[in-house]
Image 1 (cartoon, rainbow, N blue to C red):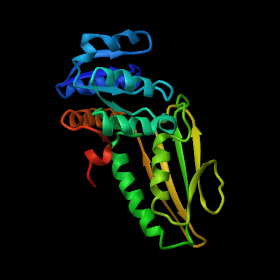
Image 2: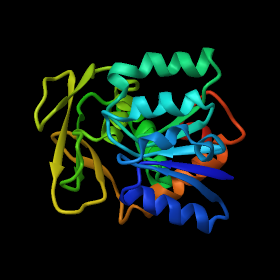
Image 3: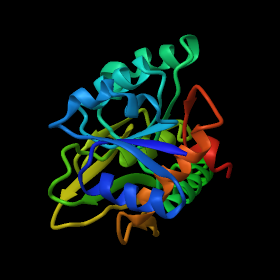
Length: 239
């Protein structure tokens, strides 16, 4: 498989190493200082582009890749508020392909499935209130993390007594508070806690390194080569 990399920071380099180890070819590497390479023959030859950049750049990167009919796998977060409908339309009506996830870790996919099932159980027990926390390195720009938002929205879809999530440690009775902590070089810790007067239940996922994210992104690219439309981790991992 021929892969183009959009964003060549720490994640981009780790994805390159992982992809090459799995027998793939990196045909183009685009970063902030060589944006003109979007229009190169090397980029156009890619089967898939893997994009890890910033919330402000992601949507524009999708558009430039789509211009050359290159499928995209992206882990960038923060763009959906303004551009979700546009991307959905391009994928459903214009034949474009985007595999997007806020987190490509297999462990997080399993954790998300557990989170969904636990929320369904807890919907029956109103004595339990729910809150969340996420911790990441000091370089992370968005807060809460995209993964935390996805986890919170999945709870909201299953817990009738909650209507929205809010940033911070406290919320109204119908809200899920999501605390964001930025410290050191933490790869990512996400926790969901249900608490009653009698006891407390907490589930936690802790990433030990970025290696799991890189592997998941390459696996997503391998899946995307033979699939189309708007794809997610639930397509790749059917729990």
